[in-house]
Image (cartoon, rainbow, N blue to C red; front, side):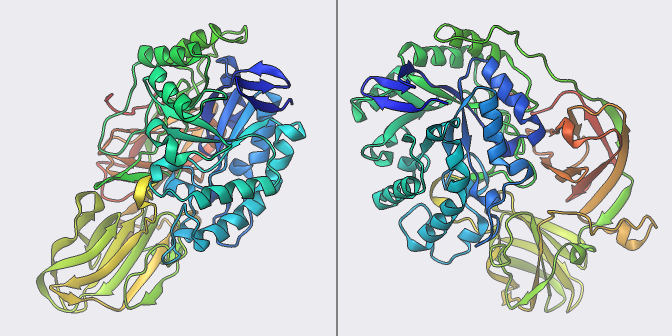
Length: 586
């Protein structure tokens, strides 16, 4: 493929004037068997480029471990598919990516380092970043445009101007890492208009991010960058949702007009997002600007291509707008994919999470509760247990909970403490000295933006009952990365009927697998697996009331559905339906 060059008056590709018309999509939020479909739909909307983040935390899940590039993380295969579709690529390797992704892509093991200062020249941060890039860049070099690959340009860091850190040595070091690692295509940064001064790097192309006001923001970019291409690095065509809010929507006509404004100015553009996808499993991030706010499972983003990969009205409007400025393929708008309906699927088998926790993780003994990071754990839950010192009524106090703690005495639920509400105390009754206190803490997503990136999970600080510190703890990590060790007694035993969190299992037989949406009316809060694939979290708090099930997860014949319900459900029935419920628009 031809190489991209930057001149005083714009981009050139193979020596010819070129405008980047790009859209963001994230391979790690899309089932790998659907990558080719999403890329084809990007080209058919008129895009010539796709924009891709790389999540460090998934590609290197263990400190000092190898780079993971299999199955849904096979980045080389994704780049090959993009090239086969005739699309160029803007690559954004971070190491920090934000993206409403867990910890902004920073691995949990990194955050376990005491005193580490992420996104700075701190050696505790730079050393593992150096090792990561040494592992990653050899896999990227064959796909650079200078090696006849699809990657036109590579981003340095991500919206660094908004970090407030102003560590130029860190940015310069990343540039050096990329260049010495063989990245010889143009580099660029992306920042909001107010952050261009702090996020820019001398000699590196700057791009500006915004959702509206294109003329004003492009003018600001020109003030900071008197020559060279104008480009909107992220045009926010939609937005993400948080638990307890509404489903964010942006008016189609408004975003169409802003896209037209960008293109009429002669600028290049990257639409964030073209296709959002899904925060499968426990991978969603969170925000904390005084109040902790976790992001939902769906990353639909009100994008031109919805969560299931179907074109929306926005897709058609954008396609028509792009056609005024560039060639668009002479092909019809892709039709929606097939969908599956199956009502009333029972999940009759039951397994207590607390009773079977020792099958799912190994207990660690200590004088105090250990954080997830101390347990070398990234995602999921921790079960903390100790004995209460005396009988009677009292108050349980906890230094801090990250993020949501369910409290049990002798297996009976007595209350919940939520970081969102700044809860730190709970009244309870101890039936006897030595009663078993159990605290189940959920990591609801590490903060992905701002000053709170060192977002440890679990319990920190003293835990006391009526002011008396509690010691003699066991901390059991429950990452739930596999459920193979679970046993479903099916014998009506006390364990099977125990109060508290439980796994519900059932099967459904299908003849024609297709995309569908799992609906859980009457269920409260938890997570879902289909054929072992972690779909993500549900919560009656909303706005999201269904979970996307990619067609490739299903199979002809018997399919297994497992629901971890943390509180209680009105029944044991779920439904597969042909449309999502993402909640009322906000």
